[in-house]
Amino acid sequence: MEISFKTQLLADLYEGKKVTDKNFKSNPSLVLQYIKTIRKLESLSNIEQAYQYKSLRYEKLIGDLKGKSSVSVNMQFRIIFEEIASENEPCEIILLSIEELSKHYE
Image (cartoon, rainbow, N blue to C red; front, side, top):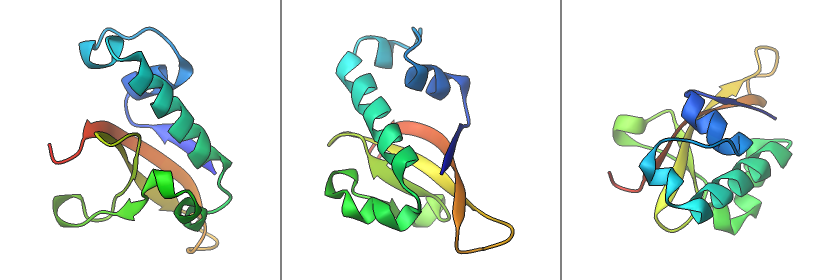
């Protein structure tokens, strides 16, 4: 499964580059957990396998974020992403577009 990032900040965090955002600069353990979570997502051959990792707490979102999904980075932060299906096989997810790393309920 391929991963794309909506913002350069999210890509830089994953690549281990230095970022100027104080929320992440002062929290290296969050960045490490973020990288670890993205690597778990990359290792999946299909999105249903995310249910096997209980620590991810994979869920489809509702309300304002309907059509998006999320996985937990830790008890406070989650990654919100969009699942993009293959044109040939609509049931097969080929790309996860990472949209944000945010605190729950904010």
